[in-house]
Structures are given as C-alpha cells and as structure tokens.
Length: 265
Image (tube, rainbow, N blue to C red; front, top):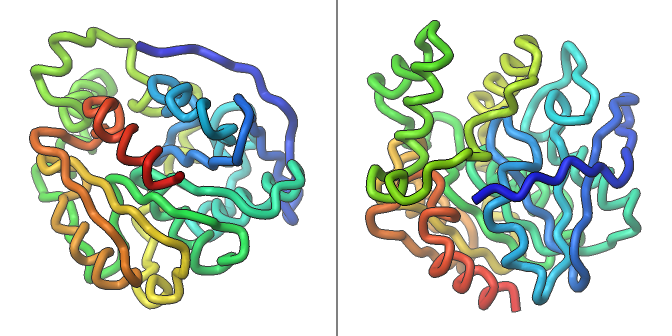
C-alpha cells in the first residue's frame, strides 16, 4: 500500500545553488532513508512508518526529482551524498543512521566514507560497490530497460522489483518505479550517476557498523554484490531474503523491517 505524502518541509541549498527538498516525519533518533535511481521520497511510502516507533525519518527528493531543482548538470552519487549532508546541516542533525537502497545505497557509501562523523549506523540494501569489480545486471535486463515503449519499461521494472506471488496480492500502485515527472535530462543524469559510481577504494574506510541486505532473486542488482561489499567494509553483517527481488524491503517488509530496526537499536 502507498501512503501519499507530498508535503515538503523545506529546501536545503547546495553549494552550487540547487534547492533540495526534504521531508522529516516522526520523532526520535534521525534515520536518513535514501531512494533508488530516478525516484523521489515516495520510494519509502510503503514502509516508512515502520521506523517511527524509534526514529524520525528524513527523506529528500534527489536533485532532478520531486520538488527539488532539476539542473542540466551536476549528477553523481558523490554529489547526491553532499546534498544529503546539506540537508542534515539544514536540520541541525549532527549524526544520523543512514539506510540507502539501490542507487541510494551507493550514495550512502559515500556519506559513510567521506563523512564518517555523520553516520552512526549504516544499512545498505540491494546495492553494489559499482565500478569494474561489481557484478552488473545481464544484457537481457539492460535491453528490456532500454525499450522505447514506456509502458513496456514499466512492466519490466515491476517484474524486476517484485515476485509474481507478491504482485498478485498487492495490486499497487507502487512507489518504486521512478518519478514520472522527471524531465528527460534529469533521468539521463541519474543514469549516468548510478553507472559512474565506483566506491571500491573508499569502502574500507567506512567505520560505522554496517548491515547489508538483498533479495536473493534480484536481477536488477545481482546478489553476488553482497559478498563483495562485505569483504570491503570492515565487520559488515549480511542477510539475503529468499525469493525476494529488488524491492525486498517491501516484499519482505516484516522480516526486513524487524532486522533493520533491531540493528539500528
């Protein structure tokens, strides 16, 4: 189920002048939730409230999405990470838990590596280290996502996100299939940012306790990336969810949410 909430609390302004919209909900220790590529804060609508017994959740609309500015240039996972720190500064949050999924997991890697004093605990979901050592999706998935028919691409994304059994019981709408209002240049910028990510050399510098989560049937970001991340991040813990695809955090909401909340405590 989706819980629409279009309220934007305020805007933080990056050092290049871009306005980044952010949203804070709940009360308690701050938890930053980072969405996937070409998505805004609605990525988290289905599970966000699960964290509000212990945390206040902080989301943002990446530059290029939602209510944020949509510049022609300036898209990279490092730039997105700096935008997150700008939001934390605007909120007066010195240290937070950070949970990033998909491209958001790549952004979270840079926050933890470049701003270790800002991250108390780190959760990385359905993500990879990027670069030449990462295990990439196969060619058939890339071709399916490059189709000119947007409806066909949406069907492909839905299949990559969720198993058929879960879809049969959850008819949608789904908040993980991309921001439909993104301009084409911003969508290209997000693709370039995600494809250009390579944090391999930075990962050993992550000092925050880290939990790595992944669906074992994920074809969008193959689960073979889990041991690669775990080998590079000191003392990282891992968990695979049997039968789950990319959006394990929704499909395995109960188990994934409970494990994450326990880790963050």
